[in-house]
Image 1 (tube, helix red, strand yellow):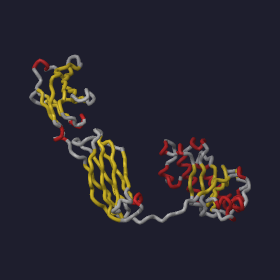
Image 2 (tube, one colour):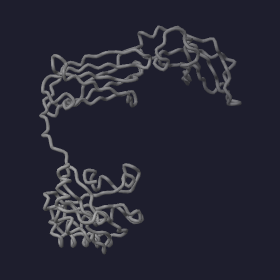
Image 3 (cartoon, rainbow, N blue to C red):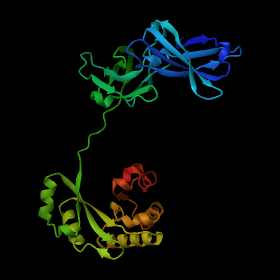
Image 4 (cartoon, one colour):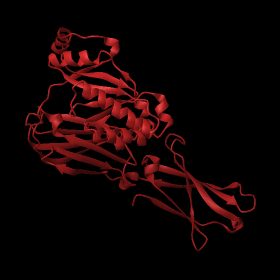
Amino acid sequence: MGATGIEITMPQDIAKVANVSHAVWTSLNGQDDIKWYQATKQFDGTYILTFSPKEHNFESGHYNIHIYGQSQVSYSLEALSSTSGVDLSTDKYVVDPAVSVQNHDANNGTLKVRIAESAYTKKIKSVSVAVWSESDQSNLHWYTTSDVYDGVVTVMVNEKNHGYIKGNYTVHVYVDFTDNTTSGFNLGQYALNADEPAQHAPSYFIDISSHNGVISVSDYQRLKSQGITGVVVKLTEGTSYTNPYARAQIANAQAAGLRVSAYHYSHYETAAEARAEAQYFVRVAQSMGLSGSTTMVNDMEERSMLNGGLNANTQVWKDEMNHLGYSNNVYYTMASWLDTKGGKLNTAKFSLSNL
């Protein structure tokens, strides 16, 4: 059993009591573990109190039980008894949490360790998981977390944290409880055989507008020597502005061997305006020799855009860009505009990978 039932027979002179409550705490450390419980009335007029030693840190010793009844007349709580109690040795109530491996995927090199409390386990404070495959533990990695949700802790194990060394991985789990005790579990071995992903060198680009003026080929080449691989040039704004330096900025960047992308600073508040801005953006891009494969950026920073249907209007912009043959579209904006941050822009609609 993980709970103790105590049967209390109520005397005749308190028959007008509506319900019975109990305050329960152990004699250890005063009333630091006091809990209130509602007793259940039986057919014969007695009351049954059921409480879990887990709610009292599984402390052994004397459990104080004070009994209160709510008057059917005044609805106030009245002390009925303060002498009841029970002596418990709680060791027999304590069991280990359920510790298991789930979602083992050897080919992807992952598995999940799940640790779950029950009414019969101590409360979990934190969990550490030691995982390794090499005999000398040279690829040992510790996964540690104190995130406990509804009595459950999950730890994700990934082969990438172990140098992508294929083999049979030993999994040990150590659970720290709130009473400062620890339990250890050996979950055995699990194969992790993922291939290491191909490594790609990082790429960096710079944002260029009319504020930068003419940038020479040699200027771009110096940037390239410092790791810059591309430029995104401000091309247009609204339906009337074109960056006067854009043509030279694009040509010189291409001559230096840099990848060129373009961006449009948007103002649209209606579907018609969104369509017109997309048409203007594409018309200027074509005039400067940028093909349909060019990455085209919708720069959304103008706060007035929030006055209209931002998502519907942006979808119109995207559809028109696609219709005109420019389908490699991404979006730039502030984090505060994203619905994941409480904003209006639907990140699922336009995909976080494109934002």
